[in-house]
Image (cartoon, rainbow, N blue to C red):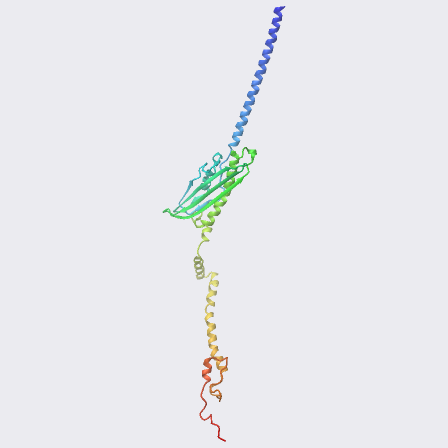
Length: 313
């Protein structure tokens, strides 16, 4: 009996041990599956975070400059500004500016050079979770001898309250988004400044001046064009001839007035032979309407024997 009881006890213990081993194996397998799932999830999340396509500006109009070479100078490396976090961005702002300049600014001339300089490009994480971005650039036009012929500046600032659903305020996704917004503003601002302050240096793809450059021609060129069209018999002849026909009419008006003045004076003044001298005023009474010349004509001495002394009583 004792041997049989011991055998039963051993069987029971063995059965429990096998069951425990099976439970442990299952637990280990479940843990391994959970770990694999977690790793896969993290890998998928990392892939999603790294899916940041480069900024493209090829769909925008290129700006052709009347220079032979085009260069980009980057003076805004990430970290140049205290608190700058642009180095964490998938595409740092200074790299985005370099790419924009290379795609949009084109040298289409025969001499001279253009230098696009990045003076500043930063993203600062302010207290409260706000991201403040700033970009400062300028474009120089230089002659073949290095003399500066023109300059234009473009500045952009942007504040963004990040979407915390994409992670922390300074997550890669949020830094990518604020950089994209600043680049949209910079494209508009730079083009506006160039067309307003460097329009004399704008040409088409073939190097010919654009409409913006033609508008800066002096008025002398327009007058010469009108004279040329007048010589060829175009419709501009009438417009050009109108002032010429009216020019001689101006001096003729005083001439007519001069001719009428003696006639009117002679009509008002009595004839020297028909008028009788005045005994009291031999020179005659001058009319206010007559001038000194008329008075001189009427003045004369009385005829001899006209004046007689009174007889004595």
